[in-house]
Structure formats: C-alpha cells, structure tokens
Length: 99
Figure 1: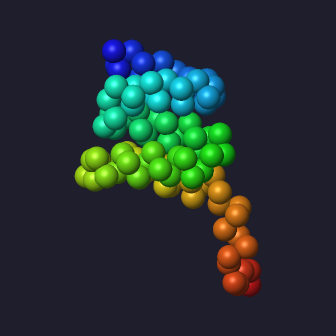
Figure 2 (figure 1 turned 135 degrees about the vertical axis):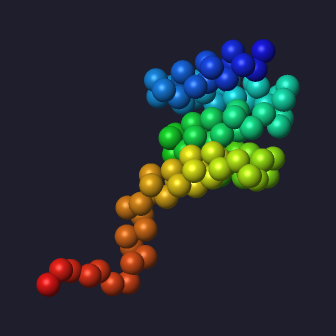
C-alpha cells in the first residue's frame, strides 16, 4: 500500500502540489509511523509550502529513525538553508568587497 502512495506523493511533489503530498504522506504515516521516505517527502512538502517548523519536525523524525541515512539531512536542512538563504544576509556582520 505505501509504495503506491509514496509514488503518488513523489508525483505530487514533482508537480508542486504540496498539500496533496502532505495528505498522502500523512495517510502513509498513520499506518506506518516509521516510514522514512514518507517523513522526508512530508518534510519537503512542508518546506516548499513555507511551513518550515512542520518540515523540520518531519526531517528530525526521519533522522532519528535512520541517523546514518543522509537523505533527510540533505533534503531537509540543506534545503531549508538554501530556501531561506536571503534571511541569513541580515546576520552577516561584514561584507567583503573585492579590491
């Protein structure tokens, strides 16, 4: 069951239908709360929907389940840093200019 739902969730992510991806992943996780890829997909869908806190929670659960699997870290936290990179400019105390 979860394999076809995971495929549908991935397709929803690919077509930027993030609410559908979240619903599909939530459905998977109701039956299989430790389904790693459902957690990663759900985290990514939340991130793309600007629900960063919810995304972080999903990524943290995935990492706790499979700490040696780097997918959740790469997609999750690196994705968050990339998506929110402009927000970090305010924290740079110095800007270097060439010359």
